[in-house]
Image 1 (cartoon, one colour):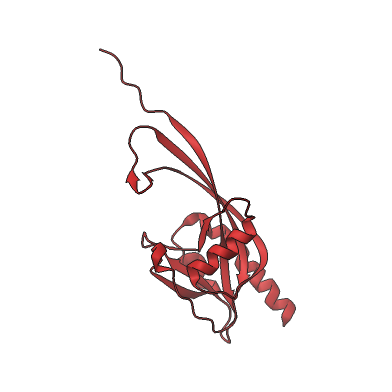
Image 2: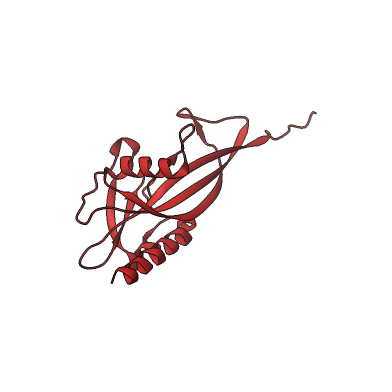
Length: 165
């Protein structure tokens, strides 16, 4: 009886970029978190388009997903990377050859005008946007890999506030 071999897997690289968007308020800075299609709190992000820089992609995706036009990049915050098995391709469940995805995500700290209202991009499955105080945001985010970039973003916000005080 011939042995059945496991389907081979190959690695596919994906590059995405996103934003840690904050706005100043009289009660302190607030950071925008999105409730994603999986019911988890995260940050706006998306794939880089051909010949697009991470910063340009982060601005475009953040503006689209939050529905906020007037955001500006303050500083790069860092990157995370995640590994996962591809489950769907073109909307259909993948069978046979498994593809391992290595996704690199570049994050940028961005500032939005005080009092701005977000309009979640529901067509992308974003259910809502919540503005969270900086001292709660690391605990509120659902994805552990975002905690370190959020801590760095909060630190930069605090340093900027001290310099401007």
